[in-house]
Length: 240
Image 1 (tube, rainbow, N blue to C red):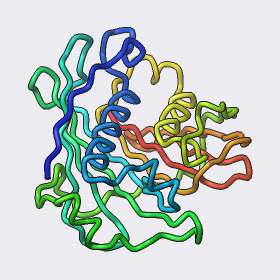
Image 2 (image 1 turned 45 degrees about the vertical axis):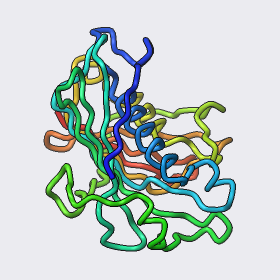
Image 3 (image 1 turned 90 degrees about the horizontal axis):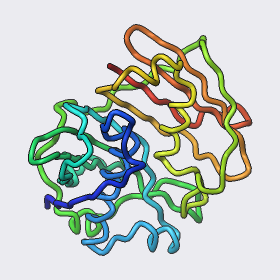
């Protein structure tokens, strides 16, 4: 099942040059995925309140061109055919005025909040999503982000209440904002990244601080985000 949705961006979704922010693109695609889940009766908030939560482990995004202010935004999303009962993939396409601008894929696990363990995704739940055989990327597995050994920038970030979502964890898009804080000023202001990878390792909860550490390796800008007990929470990789 391919689900289409429209989205009307708001002013804070845009950069000064009228291009859509990378974080806004993630938000739009996330909302498209939620629409798909709602349409098959698998509400993410209701599921979490009942003890089962979909947990995002990975993002991969390719920006062909950045939408600009005034473009009409439409999305398509679908679930891939399931290869393992413990891991599912969801793909995305984003169009601006009918032109394909962004391709993305995500990886998810179903987490039992009572046992603290990953759950098997049962066939009846998979079938509700009517998985598609098509994929936006040819790779069968997402590439691994390598944790650098040395860093050029280190920033401490104090969590805000608004960073915490309905699962009592830092919301996944916030990690991209944390990573942006650690980018060198000239990189942040001048580079429009075309490729983004995020891997989520450990959830950060309220009341903690995080440390964002930046390094450039080859042509990749990597930010590692650590909880205040020095546990690696997420890796964010930007490529021009």
